Image 1: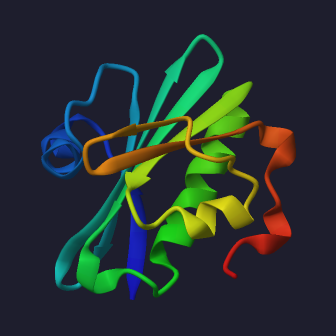
Image 2: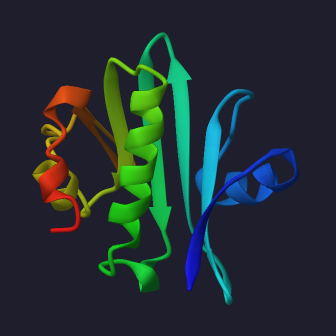
Image 3: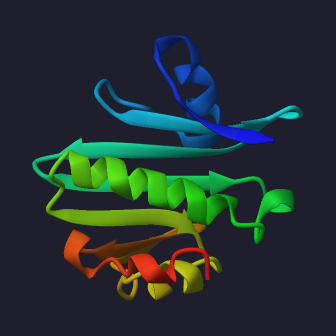
Length: 129
């Protein structure tokens, strides 16, 4: 069994270890099971723009965890009235977000790629495919 924990101050360091710097006001989530933390997500909101950073441990990828965490993060971004959403993920994993409505790379940086979508372009029925 696993869960998504939206973290408060006491666990932000754990999320930062996986995701990098977390600014005040950012929302962070951890994917946790009985073995420990195996994924994390970060929502940085700025001027009605949401920047989502997603990490799933390589050995846990392609099992639907990233899709589930991304959907939870998209719902949070929509609730915050985000006008546009940028998704930051490791290169090579961009095929599945494109199915959801994310566009071609907005930018590539090192081992990561950024994809963009407007909330109204998210294809919810493609989640989990």
